[in-house]
Image 1 (cartoon, rainbow over the protein chains, first blue to last red):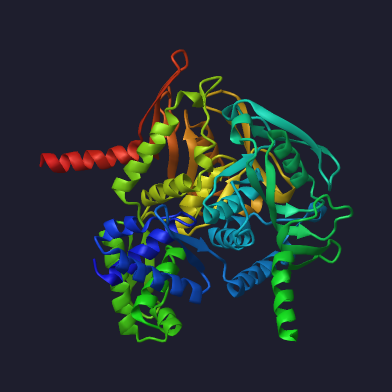
Image 2 (cartoon, each protein chain N blue to C red):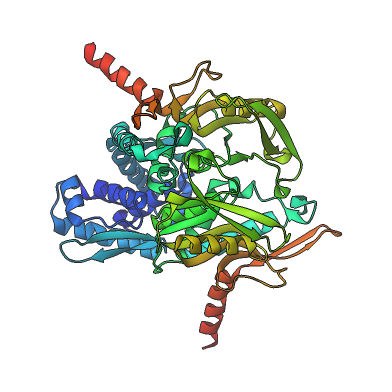
Length: 281
Length: 281
């Protein structure tokens, strides 16, 4: 197989298998090529990915070594995409009774969802994560998009018991914003003790739902590896959650004047702050 | 930019943008290269994708033309993956009270879900599809995986009204297997009339849920473009649905002997039948 064709195939294979350690012998046998040629190919792939800020390839030496593709979101592209979403979300037609926002169309677009997943997963690179958890239903697509980039399984917490979940552990919690009792249900076999769990959700106001998931993790003897939300709301009196990543922040919903204002979340702000500091120095 | 680097970047870009028509000028400007060089690059990408049965590139001529990546599942890899899932699903520990199967772990694995999406979307290539619809919750990851490959939006039907959906259209239907009245809810703004909808679900027994979605589509003046389910059950007395694609078929659940038997669905069987016929000729 020629180098040009190998490069296409290598790129294809690595993109389909993010975060998976692939022995060099796998490629050497697949392409019937010397390991040295494969190493050269991988250098070309790595350089291109890094130049374009698409991620990187990590090489692990030794007998059980190999190469691993780590997808990373390009920060400029991420900011552009989030800005596009911000503008979409600020459309006053999204305003629903009670000051809620209609966002199902945006979360129904695989392009946006995959971008959100890519950006969110970049925020947790280097953290030890065994699985991604979310609660039904709007967090589900985001959780899968994050999990695909991290190559980890997804666990979905339900609001009601379902026959197809078998025995469950149920947790009652108080919704931070509505102050009502709600229930969360997770199949007993879904989670092993000591699992490190990344909690993902679409929206966080007072943090009651996420707090419910943390309580659920405690019941299973699992731990929180991180928390990521697509949109956080600024209107939180007493936040239950301190450490989390957000991509967008809902600053204000003015029902009377039909005006929605959205800002960057703490993840992008941290980037901007860092680059400002760099300019000052 | 050198050809080797261009090939990596081209492959990356095309894979991230399936089913999207990209003008050649986009790449020519991106790489500061002549259109003729880009055409040669694209031929290399196309040949490699087709040789490996990963899909194809379609070129559209003319001023509004360009190139489009169509992902297609490799049939042999698909059969291997489905066989792997079949064996996982036949594990008697999945048996739940009432003869239900626990499949949330399998549907929580992005690798399996992305494969299911790839295979399922291949079954509908060439069909006119505007969006993908499913009902909460287990169908959601499959629907997104299918939609990602088709580059179409996802619409999620709920079981209950939610404040974040605004005004809704509700449909009552009889579950084919439990014979109980159930409700389906879809936001009024989720679906425009005349939309061609691909219905996707994880499991189909008598077809009541899918029939409910069809009724819902009629309420919106939308039409069915196709139906795809991950697992169909053979135990159906009077099926409500005639034309559909299934990847696996649950043949029998013997609760007494704790035995589950699963076969290929009609999609794979159709492939096998076609190759048998080819051998006979």
